Length: 279
Image 1 (cartoon, rainbow, N blue to C red):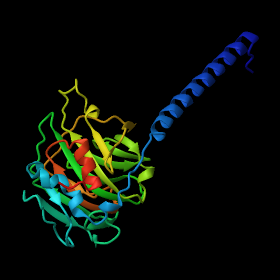
Image 2 (cartoon, helix red, strand yellow; image 1 turned 180 degrees about the horizontal axis):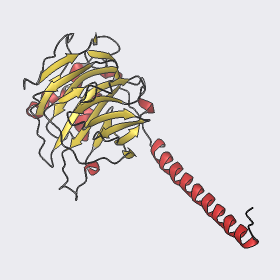
Image 3 (cartoon, one colour; image 1 turned 180 degrees about the vertical axis):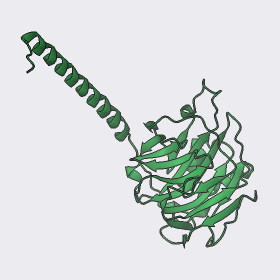
Image 4 (cartoon, one colour; image 1 turned 30 degrees about the vertical axis):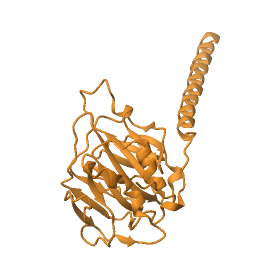
């Protein structure tokens, strides 16, 4: 039988008290981090004038075609492939049975309904600049149904955009998300402008997260490290619209026209695209 004297009881009491204090501190830290993320002020502008107006979506494309490397408009039902309106001959392959829409469900022109069951569009031969220190802007329309672990868009190294665990933002495919609270996006049509930065490990003085920007409906969002740690990455000549590069994590919802630029769009250009300020 173990006998604990008063001195031993005091030591155990101190130890238990210390452990309780550490638990309280840990819970406070977790709460602060969660509050910091989930209290991010996210607002989605609405613009009824943009409905059905493909010209609005392609405004920047019209004024800066030399910087556009891919532009898919979904003007017709893409049974097998879709036509690259930028004339840069990006190849495309439609996988799975995708329902084509051209009605009130689409914010700009035609759009595609994906059920999250094996559907995506594989893009290849994208004439993209992945040099370190350059930017790539990906602009597209999205209406997400709220399911987790989905990629609306990614390059072939899984440097893309990911929806998971209440977050939406940039990922490098390593269980990391640098982004925003995703709850406001559920069944809420948005125009997404994601500005990717091309970086490698030698760029330690200018980390990738300092250069990533995400706009929703023309408004720049405040990004936080939601999960993991985002690492350096570069875009690629292949990409997937509607899933991960491994044909997994399929998107469930509506995807519309997509434009890829070989540069960083300005805030005013992105705003003009959404608010339909045509040249």
